Image 1 (tube, rainbow, N blue to C red):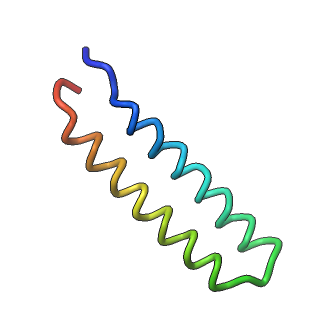
Image 2 (cartoon, rainbow, N blue to C red; image 1 turned 135 degrees about the vertical axis):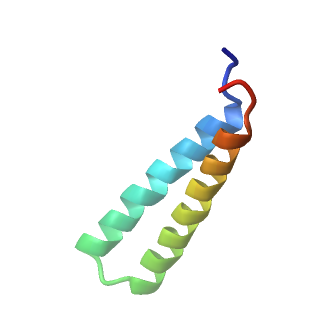
Image 3 (cartoon, rainbow, N blue to C red; image 1 turned 180 degrees about the vertical axis):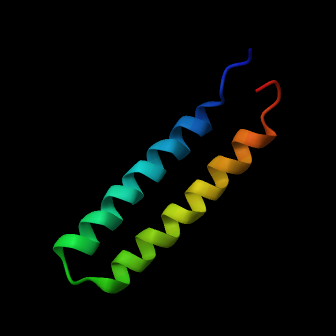
Length: 59
């Protein structure tokens, strides 16, 4: 079985960070525009992680 690329772990970290940040902004602040930006960044990170996962050979 092959090793996952280091970029995969970086993207996974970004997904977690953007997810927690979006949750925090939703529940504890009134910054709707910043919440929307972090949510879109999280979506882009998750789609990139999904693409990288399915295009990595021998998984």
